[in-house]
Image (cartoon, rainbow, N blue to C red; front, side, top):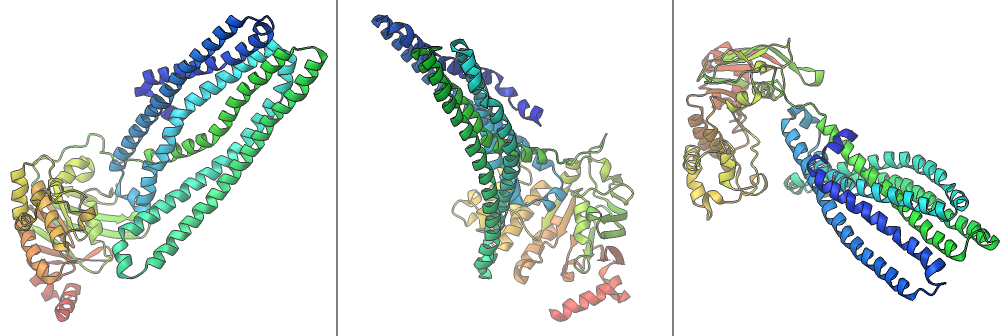
Length: 573
């Protein structure tokens, strides 16, 4: 993990070197004051060297001006290094998220993922900047101050520094407790973010059911967990700071007693004693910096560990020597396909289906039978394991084809339309980002949405709000159809595309879908059986098996499950 973290410094090597050089100079300049103090008290003042006193003071002032500029450089450009590393990590993480399979998102809430991208990486940014700087400045100051104190009186120096091993032991002990506590606190923070994301996304449902109190109670559970984790974290931190601060206070007691005795016995002069006090404070200050840095270190390490957890999730990958799917005719076949999610109950059981180029294959049957799973397997959203059958497009096993080429050849229209924040044009262009304005308009016209768009003040540049909140269900569905028209795939999946619409809107949408299906192999999932009567073949899927298949008239003549479902819907209508 450390090697991976250090690797992100790569693009910033030169700036990091300058930052470290500036930090080193800050440490060196810090040692000037006790040296000048010693000279003042032991030589310049007793010998009445007034001009030297003024010169020495002027030199110290000049050096402090230089140190001020160096500190500005370290603070500004050091933080830029951290921001640059944070940005690169965020881009890497976001790009990696795009490559992860559906199963990852099934098991991870959006709010938790967002925490990894934001607050976790901010802590990493702070560590990336302050880590090397604090370690270098503090280490150099400790070494220089120790070395200088030895030149004054080595016995007194060793007496005082007997506290250092105790400080190391205490730091190590509480560091482990802080690590566990801050890891738990970060997890609870992710829980809160997940709760907020879920609640805000579903705010309309909450209001519709007047369940604000329920959401508040759910949020309180996560918030209480965060408060509890924070108490543990701050308890560990308080013990850490109290113990280490006590030990650093003991330094001053040792100086007071031992230094006083040495001064009384004549072993050291008053000037040396005064210098010793100043120099020891120069030692204690970086020690305190390192102690305070431990909290930031724990936060940064926890954040980077959570970053690495996702980065180590296995992305979707093409098979070795995977082939491109070119010149797609659109023949699809499910050959003896069985499937289960995470090894649990089998969702599909030895399914055999086939659709020739340009045909419409309808999947109907009770909910939970496996129809949507078939639609997810065809574009390789879920990998079909070896030995569980084969899915073919134009006679080629999709496991041996590149993921991108398979998905480019398939268009999907679902019941739950997802639109991105942005304009109408942006969302249509999602079907093919390099399309021209004329092609966008043509796709909108074929989806029967162009006339509506032109009634809007900003036309195609109209902002639609988050997830298309400013549009009706039918308008959102037509935009998604326009998007598929622009993509122009050879294979089409319609997964309950009209089931959420009213009957009148469904009629208009169905016309657009009929236009979209022309010349394409279409896999239709529908509960409204009236919409699939014209399909070339209808497969009735129940409990993971194809229990009936044929045209509408053939299935009605059989008098099986299809007729039962159809007559039930007809009676309800």
